[in-house]
Image (cartoon, rainbow, N blue to C red; front, top):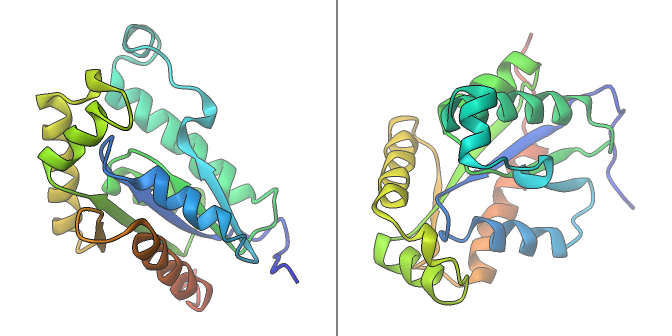
Length: 188
C-alpha cells in the first residue's frame, strides 16, 4: 500500500548532492528501484541543462542558472503533484542554496546528504565506466572540495562511495528517508 499525502501538503525532501562521478545518481536510482512506498525520486537535470554559453547569456552564469533551477525544483517539490511523503532529489547543487530555496518555498522538513569520494576515485569513474573524461577536471575537483566544505560547515551527513558498496550506499539513503518519514515538521 503506497504512503501518499494530500497533494497540497509538501513532502519531506531529501536532496542528494555531490560532484560528477561521486555516485549520487547510482544511489538514487538504486533507492528508486526499491519502490519504497511514499517515496518519489527526481533528477535535477530533468528540467534540461543548458550549455555554459546559454547559462551565461540567459542567467549570467552557471551559479545563477543553478540558483534559478534550484528555486524551480523547490517550488515543484512543494506542490507535490505526485502526492509523495518523501521526495528524493538527485542534484549537483550547493547545500546552503538548496536548503534556503526549500525553506523559501515552504518545505519544512528537508535534509541534504553529500555523496562523495576521493578525487582519484571520482576521476577514474569519469574516465572509465562513465566515459565522460571531459568532466575529470581540476574545476570538478574544486567543486567536490567546495561541496565537502559546505557539508562539513553545515554538519550534513555524507556517504563515501569509495568506502561502501552501492547497496550499502542505497541503504544509507533509505535510512535518511525513514528518518524524514518519522520527523515532525517544525511549527510554522
